[in-house]
Image (cartoon, rainbow, N blue to C red):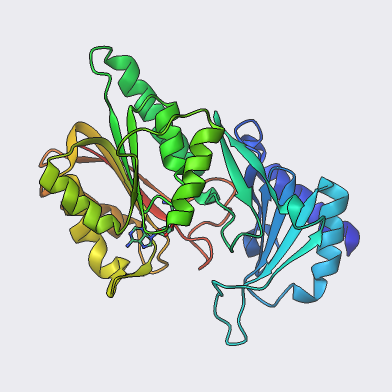
Length: 328
Ligand SMILES: C[S@@+](CC[C@H](N)C(=O)[O-])C[C@H]1O[C@@H](n2cnc3c(N)ncnc32)[C@H](O)[C@@H]1O
């Protein structure tokens, strides 16, 4: 069994080899697609996070930790048991440091030219969503291309709605965006975003941090006549704010159309969701229709799911992502 586990981990790792030169933060195991039903293992530099979404491998937890230690020699391993007795995925899961100490759960990871703070014991989310890596890197490249193509225009602007720790914005600024505006309801999360700016040597510029409802920001920006050259809209599936219940199925497409009004000509708009009921083709079609209501010449640049480390992406509830990018 021990040999078998180590062998399976080594095979899973090999599948991620295209990412080794890009980042030190990626998913090493993605459930049954890698032969580990109900389990995901994420690498954040020298620390690892094991999440049990199903009961199948819980009895083998210690053995899997041992195999992980012998292959990766981690400074820290954190286990999160995300399955409730009713079989539902838990947001406030029990978290346990099984290798190393609480302090070892904190560190910095690299993604392309960017660095990000992570804390595996902070909440179930350590500070960086791995499934958005390929899109973040593209946002940086798009701003680099825009800035390089137009020496006369030096003020390209980026809008990051539901920004979390501002990782998209760090990439946009590294790519040459003059201003990257983040909107999130959590002041604590935005502080982490400011720390990520500092970690990357980026100064904080006026108008870059809005603490509040992203939808209210969009309405305020419309009134002010603000325009952006790139927008990322990556909302949670459900959220509650001041008595308003945001639900992605009902409220996303009208919000896409409102955001489209904030886009400059030649701008791009990336919309994504982890809501497991969305179908990628229908999602991309609806986003294009909503953007086209404002920019009739809009076209879909791509529609996709997760990167190579999310093997079997789209086939399980804990690894579903629909994402599309529209150019106007
Ligand atoms: C799924 S995460 C977004 C992930 C982020 N786009 C990224 O890739 O790192 C959800 C974020 O939305 C924020 N949030 C929830 N409801 C919100 C609202 N009404 N307005 C703004 N932010 C909200 C949460 O605080 C959280 O940081």
